[in-house]
Image (tube, rainbow, N blue to C red; front, side, top):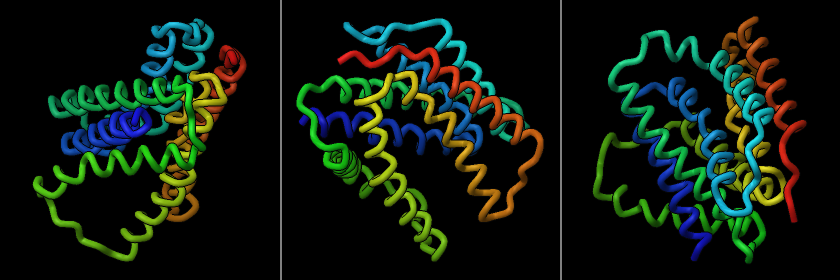
Length: 230
């Protein structure tokens, strides 16, 4: 039941906050706000008994990665300035980051652990069931299905849920929290690269520089992160 509860906290509340925040802010700005997640994760881990200690070199490396992510998605996302809606979206997303970080750390500390695929399936099922009732009664815009939309859903099911989330659970168990947490810096790189390959989206000097900064931050985090104690 702890695994199911963690699923509701991480996937349910975390993703619900992201979805709700995007009522107020564009996806690019939401992606920028979510890059604060690593700081929540290492902070919560350090605050709990027996957790990995915070080191200034690690925090500095994470700040480098954050700067790269901000350069990658920030200029376009911040073109219109920060409105009151952006502040609301930021606060909602910080709640979501807190839920994601807390649930992930508690899942990591469970003594009895299932296979990552099984654990991921239980968490996703629990989160889906928890939000099924609100989804039935709270009706927003009807879904307009298209071939491209179905392809996107299938991609997310396979690579986001089955492969990606199972890998995330495995990494949380095997690697230092600081290293796992910076996936939020790598995700924009993957998104930009896929957009360039499949949709010929712009890829110029700014994107190249941002990726170099992110990779530098990731390398520094890996260099200075505290090894996992067993």
